[in-house]
Length: 52
Image (cartoon, rainbow, N blue to C red; front, side, top):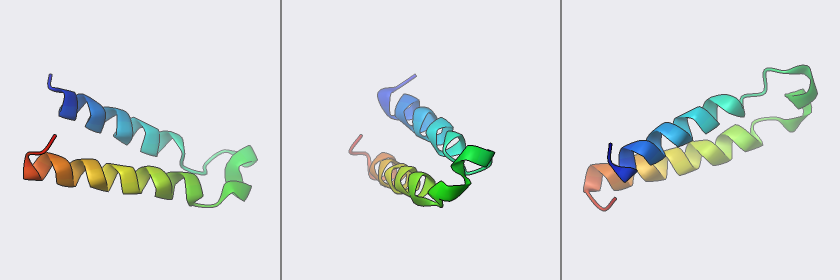
């Protein structure tokens, strides 16, 4: 398993983990999942261009 694939899997798990589905996290809005989503897009682009 390459480093890029491992990083991608970790970011996907983080994205699922920050979804506001629990009662204590409804006031967070979409900020945590938006930040992790941006990181996920950056990693995907880096993987597709071959720089990671």
